[in-house]
Length: 272
Ligand code: PGA
Image (cartoon, rainbow, N blue to C red; front, side):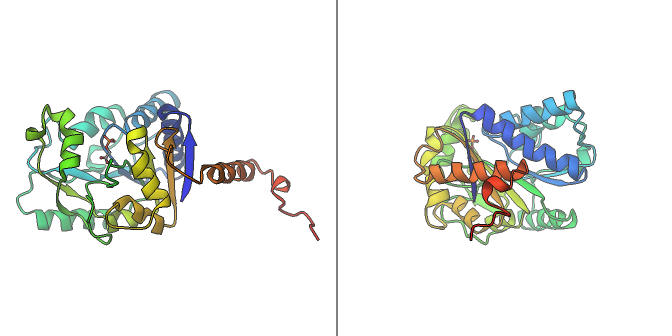
């Protein structure tokens, strides 16, 4: 896992937006996996700026969101469909038919989840999945104990997640108890993942995810099995990482490689 530690959430989000923008420019018809919550907000703001000021074109992009609360209609102010419209889609030239979010009001969830997986498959799979992380180490709504091979399905929220999200609903009793969410297995099939984490309240989850064991008790730790994950965090979220000096070394080498400074890395040197 590549670990990039930026000074603050603003810089980290700009870094994330650059990864997204590079892909959209290179593959205009790419498939993005998107997340909700407070974490990706600054990334979305930067993508909107790039669209408006630099002409970043989303007209051919397809998106799939990770999850949706069960019981909320797409126009409910706290639904993730509304979140995406207000914080991203309404400000881009994206084709509304190309934006996919699970339906929290589906009548037959088993069929709906199967169709959602099929739609991802038919679109050619997700090229780049953006992820936040819960304070309990969840990705999407894959709460601790979720199967690491799980697919899109219904999931019961933990009391920790309900407490974390109560601020959006004006009280814990108003937070839905169930969500429909992509599974860990679904997420692991994305070609590339970017895991974002900001703030000291995410530090333990990031430590367990990056440097802990792979365990269903911290579903984000399954990302250690993925071939291309970039974890971008701010200083506070990185606060409990033990190997940060090494991550910085890797980033230095990466920048030299990208700048074509190969000899400084010993490439092509005759050492013996
Ligand atoms: P947050 O939520 O971005 O609002 O912190 C992340 C999550 O629970 O996945």
